[in-house]
Structure formats: structure tokens, C-alpha cells
Length: 165
Image (tube, rainbow, N blue to C red; front, top):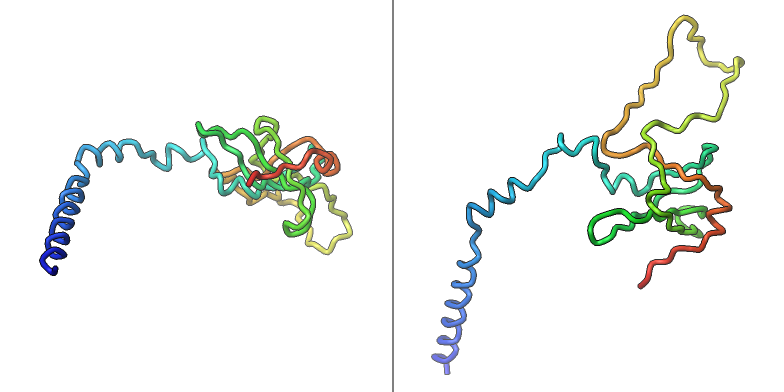
């Protein structure tokens, strides 16, 4: 009985060893994979990181915050077809999801213009004679914010987007 088990184990080991040795990569496969990679410098500035686009604030033409990007919907060929916006709610609770065609969203690299005006009675020191410059720099891997011309109420009135289960 022990001889049967020993024979079965030896035969199985021999079969596994031949399968494993047949799967060793060749040098030409490694060279082809190395040639198909892209460098950071060739991608930077011409592409955006999807992980950074999700979560971007979305504003309307009046610089009012109307929501944020929750998801990007991509077809099988890799093209972004729609942007899922989260509107309203608090900390994700009660948020209304709306799918907007990707070509209707405009991405902006510059910060949102401030809508507040400074008064001369502020306690800040005077900067007379010196120019004030902004220290924010453009990040080449993602935009600053997105624009979609609608109000929060108009977005909440749109049909809710639901993920199928």
C-alpha cells in the first residue's frame, strides 16, 4: 500500500516539475516588456492620475461649489465615458449621485478665484511698495478643480445614478 502512494507522489512530482520548467521567461519576452513601458517624463503633463481626479471639487460658472467627483466610468477600450458627481449630503451620508458625460466637464489647472473682498480695516500689515505673489504651483499630475454649469438644486433634480449589483 505504501508503495502505491510513493509511486503516485513521485509521478505527480515529475509532472509538476516539467510544467514549472516550461514556464521560465525568455530574454526576448523581458526585452519586449521593458520596451513597452513609458517613462515619467513622457507622461507627465499629458496625463492625469485617476486617483487624484476622484475627489476633485466641482464648481459652477459662479464659483459655487456644487459637489465632488466620486468616480470615473470607463469603457472597455479605456475611454472615460462619464463622471459620477456626489451632490449634497454630509460626510457621504445623503449624497445624491449623478452621472455626467465626461465631455461636459471642464477641468481647470488654476485655483478657484476667491469671491471674498479684503477690507482696508483688516489687522494685516500693509504691503505698500511690494508686490504680492501667489506661491501655488500647478501640479502636472492632476487638475485643481472641475467645472460644470449647474446649481446644486438642478443636480439634485437629475435622476440618481445607482450602481447595479
